[in-house]
Length: 231
Image (cartoon, rainbow, N blue to C red; front, top):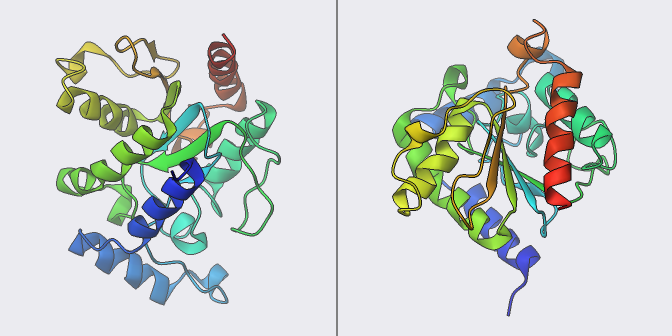
């Protein structure tokens, strides 16, 4: 019987070849061809970005979508951009990552007891996937959850928070997403047997450079997550 590592490898191979959303396919490939001047020597990934992390993780970290010149360039979640710099530093400080930097797929980064996924696997124009594009990706997230069976989910932003709750709603686990309000530091025992849901503001430059999100704010939530996992 295949183990989690094999099941995730099979799933990720399927994700990488996905072309369900014509608008996203055009955008990700256009960005990969035109590139940003600072990365003109790079061969961009330019495909859907698979999940990354510990195949036996208790914590599933759920982001929004790959950045055009971040994960869409490097091929790994939150790798090669300022959001990733902030996130992996926080995860390293909390003991979920072996290093604080995330530059490329071969930089030696490993996650411990954490797995990073996204609501949408392709870089969207203006970082705004359409509802139907999120729906097209939902099945991949559901399968990751079935494989990992996480004890906790950390939603990076309201779209990720709602995406997780939407899966539970469609399964009949909850009646409405509106029962659970998103906020930085929000925590919800959604239903018996379901992962504990934690929320933080997304580590976007818009949030981190304005001080809406600070390393200390992430540290507090990640300590709570760690304490919950160790119960």
